[in-house]
Length: 396
Image 1 (spheres, rainbow, N blue to C red):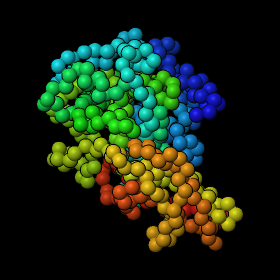
Image 2 (cartoon, rainbow, N blue to C red):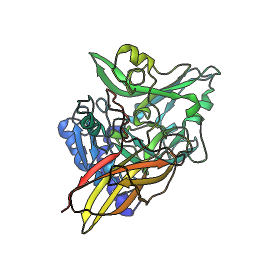
Image 3 (cartoon, rainbow, N blue to C red):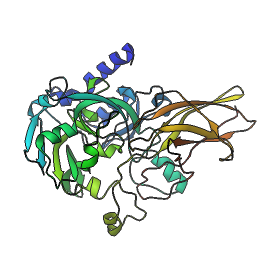
Image 4 (cartoon, rainbow, N blue to C red):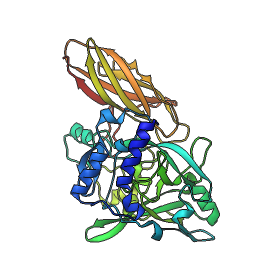
C-alpha cells in the first residue's frame, strides 16, 4: 500500500468510524449513506438497508482493495456500538463461558496472539443483476453488478485460540455468530447471524486461519459500515458467514437457527418450506471471474478483470481464459497479482479487435482442473452466479 493510499484511508476512516468510537455519529439516514458512498467511491444499490459497490474499473485497480472501493453489504441499520460498553460473549458447549471487553481482543491492546491474513470477501449474490437478466426473471435482493467483492488485509485474534481458551466440549460441531444489527422480519427483530462448522473454525493452516475475530482492515481500525468494533472473517466462505458487529459466539452441536443460515443463503429452485428445510446452507465461495474493463485500443482489445478460486483449502486459480467465438477457442490472460488460497487474482489480456462489435467471455480454471460453467441453473435468490461473464466491445 502506498503512503498516499494510507493517508486517504485514514482520513476516510476517521469520518466513518465515529459510531464505533463512541463519538459524534454520522447521520445514518439516506443522506448519511449518500455521504458514505461518496467517501468510498461507491454506487448505492439500496439506501435502507445501505448496500453499495464500486464501479468495476475502480475495483480492479489494486489487488488489495482500498477502503474507498470496498463494497458495503447490510441487512439492517448500522448499530450504535459504544466501545466502552462493548462485550463479546463466548457461550454454549464450552467448559469456561466468558465475556471479553473490546481491549482484550482488539489490536494492538490485546494480550492474545494476533495475526494479519489476506482474504477476499464476496457477497453470495454478486452478479445477481446479470443472473436475473440471463433468465429474464426478477430476483429479490440487492441488484449487484459484479462489484460486491473485495480483497483486504484483516487483522485480529484466531477464533481457534478463543475457543481453545474456553474449552470446547466433545459433542460440539458448529460455531454460531450473532451480530448487534437489528433486522426486522415481519414485525419481529432478530440480529443477523449464522454459523460455520467447528472443523473449519479450527482449521488453521500455514497460509490462512480458519477464522479470525477481526478488529482492523488494511491496517486501520474497522469502520462502522464494515462491522466495528469486531467482526468475524472466515476465509473461503461467502461474506454472510463473516458476521459484522459480532456480540456472541455460541458453540453448539447443530447449525445456527438464525434465519440467515436456516432459511436464507441457500440454493433453492422453488423456495418452499420443505425445500428450505432439506437444503444445506451455502458456505464456500464459488469459482468465478469477471471482465471489469473492456476497452478497444486501435486494432486491439485491452481487457482487465478478476478471478476468484473456490473457497476450499488448496484451491487456487491456475489460469484465466477468454473467448470471442462462444468457447470454440480460448486465449489465456496474464495473471498480474499474487496467486493464493481464498484470494482473488487480477488479470489482463490483449486480443485482436474484429471489424464489428465483439462479445468476449471469460472463465477461470483452478489447479484441480475445475472451470466455470457456461451457464448456471436457476435459483430463486440469485446466489452463487458464476457462469461465463460476457461483455460486448464496440468496434469504435
